[in-house]
Image (cartoon, rainbow, N blue to C red; front, side, top):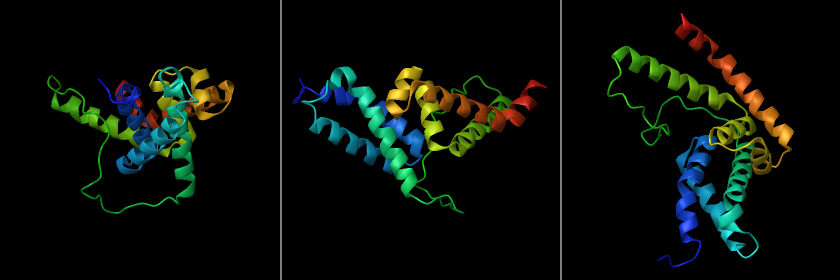
Amino acid sequence: MSEHPLDDWVRATAPRAVAYARSLLRNPHDAEEIVQDCYGRLLAKADVYDLPGDGMKLLLASISNACLNLKSRRRPFFRLVRSDDDETFDDPPDRSTATPAEVATGNELASAVAIALRKLPVQQRAAIELKSLGHSQQEIGEILKVTSNNAGVLVHRARQALAEMLAPFLEREDK
């Protein structure tokens, strides 16, 4: 039995919340810090909100805003050397039956997709990530605090940009 009535809700939503924050920030430490802060803010107002019912939308909206705020405050930088604590967030595909050529092609595509996603503006990346998590256009709008139509535009532009960035790779595959 849980110590607090919302413990089960937190346990059920935490993996998805952290994965969403990581997909936006690409930094596990910042993502976990933001998610923890967002949970703290929501749980502090648990008497105001219906967290088991509407909590996931509120949590994702809070995470989206916090990630957008963090990204806008930071100046972009780059690293010439990869550090040992850099992590990859993608689950490795099942390669038990893949040929070496298929594995190499899969790695190349996964890398191209990750690079293309990083090039998207944060709000477009958030919209496409939410869409990939199964949220409707209306829900994406609510989470990102934009109109439903604007959410659709963000998803559309993200898809267009990804298609353009991945076109050279995908055209090679068709041949």
